Image (cartoon, rainbow, N blue to C red; front, side):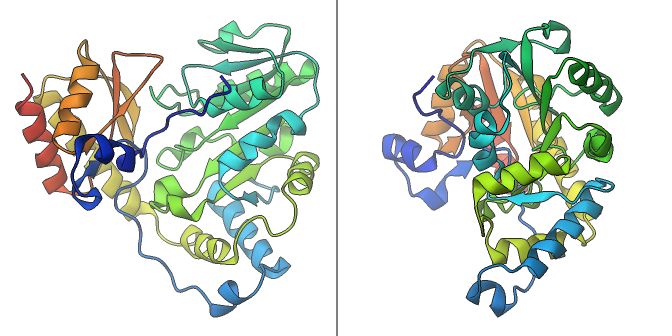
Amino acid sequence: MNAPIVHGGGITAAAAIYGGELEHWLDLSTGINPCPVPLPDVPIRAWHRLPDRELIDRARAAAQSYYRSGDILPLPVPGTQSAIQLLPRLFEVAGRVAILAPTYGEYERAFKMAGHCVDLIAGLDDVRADHAIVVIVNPNNPDGRAYAPERLVAFSEEMKARGGVVVVDEAFGDAGPQLSLAPFASRLPNVLIFRSFGKFFGLAGLRLGFAVAVQPIMKRIEELLGPWAVSGPALSIATDLFASDVAPIQRRLSERCGALRAVLRQGSLRIVGGTDLFALVDHEQAAELHRHFCQHHILVRKFDYEPRWLRFGLAADAAGDQRLSDALQSYT
């Protein structure tokens, strides 16, 4: 598990094998909004100066309103991936780590590299008394499994009673805010929630995320990250976009998701899960189908741990849908 994990977005590597100019590839391998929102104006001081307290505080207040986190001011982090690496140092608890799987592989890798014993489990009912930390991606990547916040509140309180910690990753939660645990975080001192900024807004290159937890946990994250962890431009952009009307983004994603699913069904592919940002397909010839798409310069996500699965991200427009449909119809 020490080897790097292969994620979506490997267009350069795919083009090196199958040819074609990068700009001519259709990248459906990621779970990122393919229609990035227009960037708000960024004051020159955000580029010219290190981010000061006023800028950080405004971003945190905007995130507090957007995530409905009550008394908690979410902490900006340079992408949730960076915070995942800190988890083994953040929580010093004795016991095993349980990760609801299959899911984002970096959690398992981070804990194992730190020497923790990790169990991959199917659901909350499989958590044992010796599990000191439980990681839940909600909604889950890649199958879209989701737990209602009331269930997670009850589970977190059970873990608290025996000194356990719960990490909830809501990277794909923007399109379904009713699932978020953030509104309950102030009364759950053993819970850490991660939110991704770039996936929903289509700005993954900003490398921005937020942590939602009680102050002692967030203070420790701040100490581990060090000063000026998040850039001024990222904070400025987030502040403006959090205050904007996101309903058009949600409608656009819903329309794009519906179009993707229609193409997959027309191609007789069996959809077994997903979110508004991707669909998961089970196919007995997944490897051959993946190769076929690559030959048409379309990249989708395959999985080493489940060779029957392919994950399809959203195309930006009807032309992308048609291109995927044409490639799928030509598969024999």
